[in-house]
Image (tube, rainbow, N blue to C red):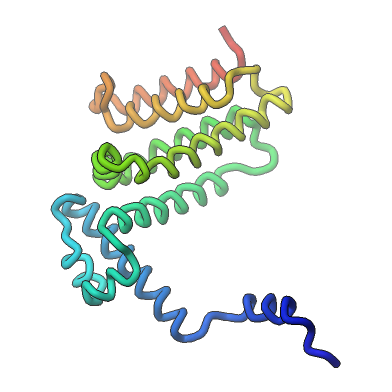
Length: 210
């Protein structure tokens, strides 16, 4: 029996369980992200130092910089981790029988919950992105693409009226974001009412109701 060619051996190697070193590195990285997330939400992004993150993660500043080059990069990782949890919430809320108008509404609702739960961190991201557009560009484009795909699929299945897909996705995401944060003319005291109105408008818009 042969051992296979080098490509096959590489594939076998890639599927092996991570060794002790890789597991330790993964635990350290996760501890840094958890510590940063806790501190950002408790104290605010600007008031949190790299030293505080390292201390809470029970690691050294030098070790931390071996995983992340800056506090902004840690912020991106915190947002990515929390957006993964939001995606899991979305998939838990839909099934094969869920129509695409409902899917878009659920996605917008979960986005609002995500923004509400991460208000301090997102505010920091918006402020930082004013200096470095790369910080939220990837997340923004990914979210727009996801909602646009739901709308496109709904149009193809005859569940959603024909609309300019990307613009519609950006309008819905933008309205949800500003209403939840209480910016751009939205009153933060009436967030729940505003989001209920946005949900009603979304259903009527996607269904082509006048």
